[in-house]
Length: 201
Length: 345
Image 1 (cartoon, rainbow over the protein chains, first blue to last red):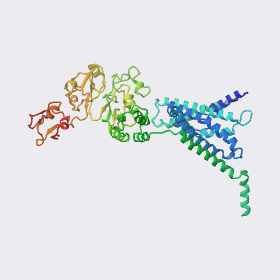
Image 2: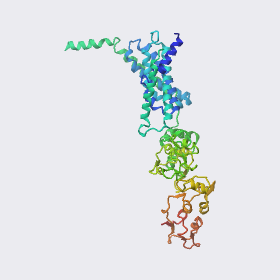
Image 3: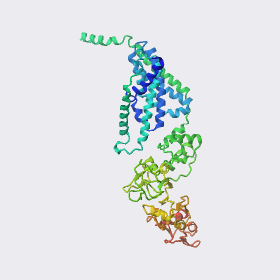
Image 4: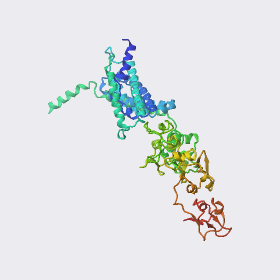
């Protein structure tokens, strides 16, 4: 399997088989909170893809050149949280100044992502993940994995938002409207995605 | 004791081969560097925001109802400061808010009369609606009107699937025990969300100080309108109200009477003459008629000139009289009298 095949496997794993939301149960807060409307879900998804890719890159560099150099691997959680929070703040400022239009569409969601555990999750899982050859992730692999994980999050978020928009018009018993039906829906989606785990690639 | 202490030490000690300094320096250093970068970035990428935008944003109701025609309260605040949009556009805030905004902006506020939503149909409940067929689709008026012109026999009337109630962000529309939608005048802000939500266009904004409503929107010919209406109070377009109106503010067009509220004096004469009782007068019975206070009247004839129904008679410099039969209680004379010589009783 060449490197392209490796990337394909990584993408399929991150998007369908080991989806962050439905298989690892990370990032559930925006999954339920920002999935009421398709366009805000899309904005959130784009922001997550963006931040996850950047965070994967920066945390990988910090881990390999700062923490592992001094055998401080046990500090990665606190260092990563610090990095992600600062990074999101910085990116928000840059976007606000240089691309006001992008800031208006992403801006609301960026601060929400600071504390999104899926972003920390991808950074930490990058340190443990292995390529099919058995070697550790290199920089480019970590960045790609972050990108695909963000896409996986967005796909699920968009699917959820699409279904919930249609649910608005359905005659649901009064006590089940809103959050209860959304939670049931999330469970059914997780079951459906569970089916992907049988794939062998 | 000493032995126990030393075993604890040896059990924990090997985990830190680099000592305690390196982690402190690295994590502390990371924090310091990030902090400096952010502080620096805050200066470099600083965006100057007019402080008035924030103040106005705080003063606005924050409901994001869109009555001002701009995207949300923040959008309106921004437009006030940067584009000079009028201060009176906020329906929920009303006149009080316009005054407050004028203070912030240091300019004059225009006059705002609060408007409220009025449903121009007396049908739509469980018992006062005639049905053509049983509709069992999506529970929404917008969806129901698309199937064979709507499930009710009157093609102009209320269907009762409460799109207006769902559109209201202020909980001002409730459904009573007869299935009719009631608008709470206290809660209604006149934002117009329900006006846009009603697929039949039954809801219109009316100034809150006008209390006479034509509760029908049927443009069917008189006989038909009466036949299909479930509440029996349809406008048949007879034009009696238009003829009786003392200020000629009612027009009949396409078999439907409509009040122009800019000229309406709230007298309720139209309601008393409507043969089908399609006009609702909320002040009916509660209206007081004018009376001249003998000691104060100086006979200036101003009231007589302004009276829309010529109920006041009297020569110059003589005591004036109000004909209680003719007076409709519009209170115009009360406002026009320079000597406050008229009272309502």
